[in-house]
Each structure stands twice: as C-alpha cells, then as structure tokens.
Length: 455
Ligand SMILES: Nc1ncnc2c1ncn2[C@@H]1O[C@H](COP(=O)(O)OP(=O)(O)OP(=O)(O)O)[C@@H](O)[C@H]1O
Ligand SMILES: [Mg+2]
Image (cartoon, rainbow, N blue to C red; front, side, top):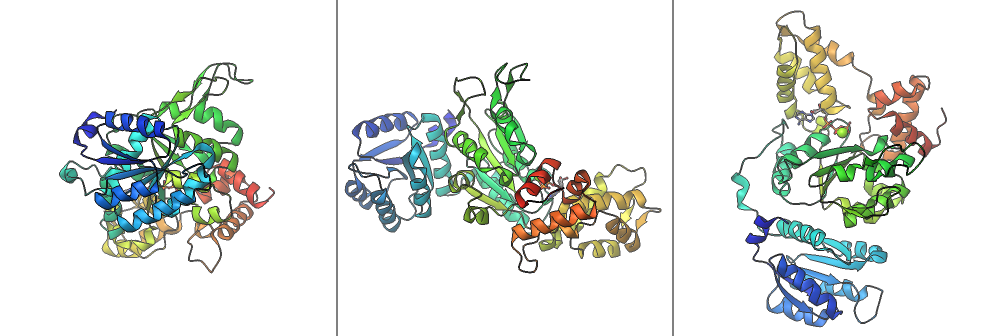
C-alpha cells in the first residue's frame, strides 16, 4: 500500500453496519491504513455522530435489521446529505445487490463497494473519494506533464486542470468526445501525472475485440485452455498490474462482456481461462468512448452499474470546431513536427482559412491536413490555395460527422446513416468504409450487426 498517502491521513471514517463483526473487522482494517474510525450499528446512531462531528467519510451498509429493500440506507443517505452535504458516502452492498448501490449513487453516494471488501481495493476507493472531496492538494505547483496536449482554449485549460487534480488519485475516468479529439492523449496524460507513471500503460481497443476473444485477451489463458491455446498467455489486466489500463471504445462492448468487465473493475480480481486460481491486480482504469452512453443506458444496451463504475469522473473533450482558437497553435505544432526537407510557413490567410473549417475528424484530421500541406508546398510559404487543396484532398468525412446538433436525429440514427452512406460509397468495401469512418474493421462489423445492415 502507498505509505506516503497513509502518513498524511488525518481522516475519521464512520462505519455504519448492523453486523458487529463487520464493524469490528472494518475498523481494524481502516486503522491499519492510518485512519481514525467511529462506528454506528444503525441509522439513528449514525445521524447522532454526524450531527455532533461530521466524519471525513462514511462507509455504510444499505440494509439494517434484516430488511433487504435498501430503503433504510437510502433514507440515511438523504439525511446525511442534508445534515452534512460535504461528507462523502461510500456504500457497502452484497455482490447481488449492485442495483441498490446504483440507486444509492443517484441519491448522492460517491461510490460503492461489494462485500466482503478487501483492504487494498477499499483503501484505493477511500483515498480517491477523500481526494476528490477534500480541499485541493497543495502540490499543484509540482511538475505537471502536459504530455504534448496543445491548446489554450478554456476547454483545454479546464481539461488540463482536471487532469492535474485527479491524476494522483485512483479514480476511474471516462473520457468522451468525437473521433480524433485527443481522448488517447488525455488518457496518457492522466497516467504520466500519476504515481503509476513508471508502471505500464496498457491500451485495449474494445471495438477491435470479438466476443469470443474478449476473455482470453483481457484475462489471459492457461496452456491448452482451448483449441489453439498452445502456450500460456497473460491477459491485458495482468499486464497492466500496478499501472493504468486504458479501455478504448468501451461503448462497443456487448452486454455479455460488460458483465465480465464489471466484475474485474469492481473487485480487481479475475481468473484466466482454463485456470481457476483467482488473480488480483492493482490497476487504475481509464475508459474512452465516442458513443452516447447515457442514451445507451436508457436503451439498456449499456449496464448502469458498469457506467457508474467507470466514470467517477467524466472528461468531455469538445470537438475542434467548438474551440477554434486552438487551431493556429495546433497548426504550428504539427508543422514543426512534420519531417520534410524544406520547412514552409503557413500564411495568415492559410491559417484563417483552416481555422474556419468544420473539422469532422477533429485534431487528427487537422494533423493530416497540415502534413499534406507541408508535403505539397512548392515554396517557403503555404498560401490559402495550398491550404484549401490540402483540406479538400482529405477523405470526405461529412458522412461520418456525428455532431449531435445534426438535424434532430438521435446519435444512433446518425451513426446508422453514416455507416450506410459510407458502405454505399465504397460499394461494401469494409476496409475502406472503416477507414473513412475512423473505426476498426471489427468495430464496423459490430455496428453493421447492431443495425442489421448486410454487406
Ligand atoms: N490537444 C492536442 N494537442 C496535440 N495533439 C493532439 C491534441 N489532440 C489530439 N492530438 C493528436 O491528434 C491525433 C488524434 O488524437 P487521439 O488519438 O488522442 O484522439 P482520439 O480521441 O483517441 O480519437 P479516436 O476516437 O478516433 O480514437 C493524435 O495524433 C494526437 O496526438
Ligand atoms: Mg482513440
């Protein structure tokens, strides 16, 4: 466990549980981690304590005196939020009653743990919740690594600020944004500014993993676990131990895999295929998606419990067209980075022209256009015409523009129409359509399956 965090802890944690043995064992475990503890057997006693001296954090059961509806827990949660709104609450539930915990999150609980709680996972969650609740850590003056994130717009400054604040915690982060907005870059920045920076950053593109491969890929497999498993293989979770796992395109995960994913993210334990010994890992989870998860929750294509597990914090990266002031900076940055014999400068007319475009492929598209303009340059200055040529020579991304402002369509409808249009345009050529849409071939296959589109 991370001892420098422990030594700073001056926190009192209130444990509310009607089971005396749970209160005692949790107390011992938490005191071991350097916290002070107080305990209460039920809601009334807990509220007394909160009234007298609000603790730094409350760990509470949802059910008291044999009831299993969770009503007592919700009631207590509501009263605490009135008496002491700044005191964070973490719920403790049995594995089978996660929906109850999800309900509790809606009433303001910060997180939930499933019993029995292991010391290590519990400590991580508590530290994270305390770090987010408490006053800003004064180490903000410490070196901050922008990890190559360029931009001075309010949106980018906000994102960098948040990254600075949350990187040292183990909070799970969900990064949302259109294709090419820089989600991966931000995920790396979180890792590079965390205490895990010298441990692995493991990236998994869930859009590219078929359901049958999911388990062996994520959890690994023993030798001979299935036909073709000639050697033992470590899964991505194990490879990410002590580091950060970046789950890209989490919205592409089907419901079956979502359940399996939930369990690892919840308990930090798993079993490789063909090996019943449980492994436990110490990981920080960062996810990214360009899907609209809230609407997937409503359609029940994405599990609510998984959603709450992956986004203690959401970072939304706006599309480039909503932060045009970053465009000139990005142009200069990419121009300087382009390996060409003869460096050409962008004229102010060229920059003005590029800053006014719609950039459906966002920063990735801008990078390509700048590189193309540099390669096509026939003199020391890139003119407006040169910029226009480079911009229009790119793939036509308008069909793939998933801007949610488009003509009242739902995101899903837009997605479907982008997929259909692209397949038509490329006469059913999967690779070409996938490249244009900026997704993997596998992800395209899954979308076709989802929308019932036949090749
Ligand atoms: N703010 C930025 N500063 C500098 N480079 C950036 C910035 N944002 C994005 N990029 C660059 O743009 C490209 C796309 O970024 P990235 O891969 O992080 O996007 P993404 O959101 O993960 O895209 P996708 O959804 O398609 O996976 C990368 O080459 C990245 O380095
Ligand atoms: Mg990406």
